Length: 166
Image (cartoon, rainbow, N blue to C red; front, side, top):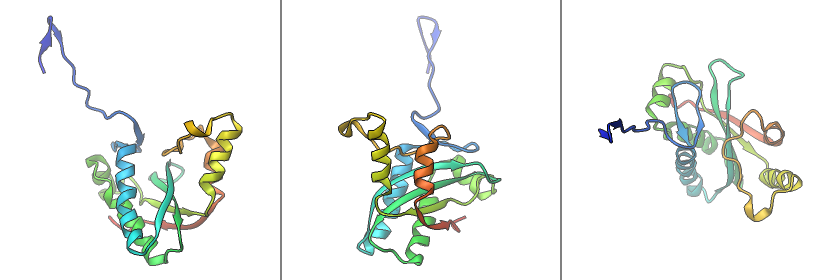
């Protein structure tokens, strides 16, 4: 650090693009992407793939927890999906998340597998609002202000799993 023209130089500690946070945890879109990629490796072993994904923070329970929505190409067994759920949870390496999970300040990660076409419904929703298809990017974290997208995701859940990873 130091100073410039007798003005202290600052170093920002928080990450940009913070999307998932409940307690002292700070996870970005990149952290979420890496976690989904790790789970995708398990699916690939079964000749399956992640079609698309999104997430949200559920604070309606105490303690709050992360919810990850996956659309999967193909049919995965319950065992493989539970492994994916645990893998997603254990792949978040942020120290605040890991320590909060260990002391149960953040609840078990929830994996919600959605029906095929769910993310197409989200695209159609945004197109209806005037979004240009070439500019559309799937929201990776759906905030509480985006109730319509939350509704689309929650109304299309095929299976639900909770992590047993911690």
